[in-house]
Image 1 (cartoon, rainbow, N blue to C red):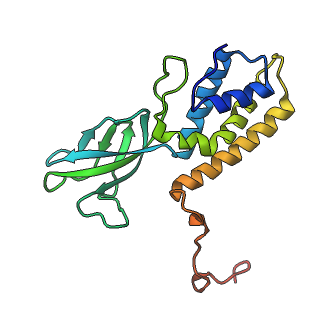
Image 2: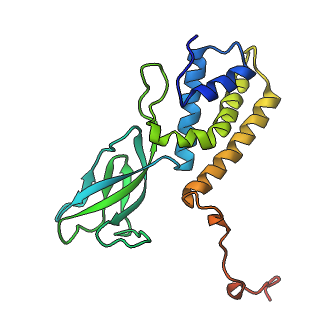
Length: 213
C-alpha cells in the first residue's frame, strides 16, 4: 500500500491506526464521499471570481481558477464601490446551475463584479486523492479531525466488514456532524473569533407573554 502525500497523510495514518486492515481503495472512496459532504454542508471552501458584466446580459457563465467546482453563490458585489463591508450588488441574484450566475436586472454599464462561491470536489488526482491546492490545506489542518470521525463513522457502519461496529459508528458520526456544524459557523462568520456571539441588545427584547395576554 502506498502512503499518501500531504495534505492526506495525517488523516490516512489516523484512520489506518483505527482500522489497520483497511485497503487504500476503500479509504480513498470514503475520504472522497466524506470530504464532499463536509464541503457541501459547510461552505468553508470558497473562491472569489471576477465576473465581467455588461448590458443587456443577465446570465453570466464562469469558471473557477483553482481546484474544485462551484456549488453555491455566497455573495455578488461590485468591487469598484465596495467599502470595508461587502454587500450584494443586486438582490435576487442566483446560481441555480453551478457556474452560471443569473441577475434579475441587467447592469446599466459594463463593470466587473466579484462573485464569492463555495466549492466542492470535482476531480481526483493521479494517486486517487482529491485535488486541493496548498493554499487551501488549512481546511484539513483545521478540520481534519472532524473529517476523520466522519470517515470512521461511515466505514464502521458498513455491514459485514471486519471493522463493522454500529455503536462506534454512531458515536463517530455524531462527533463528525458536530464538527461539521462548527465549521459551517466558522464559514458564516469568516473565522472571526466570537463572530457568532452577537445578539440583539436587551432593549430590543420582546416582552414575554403567556397565552393570549
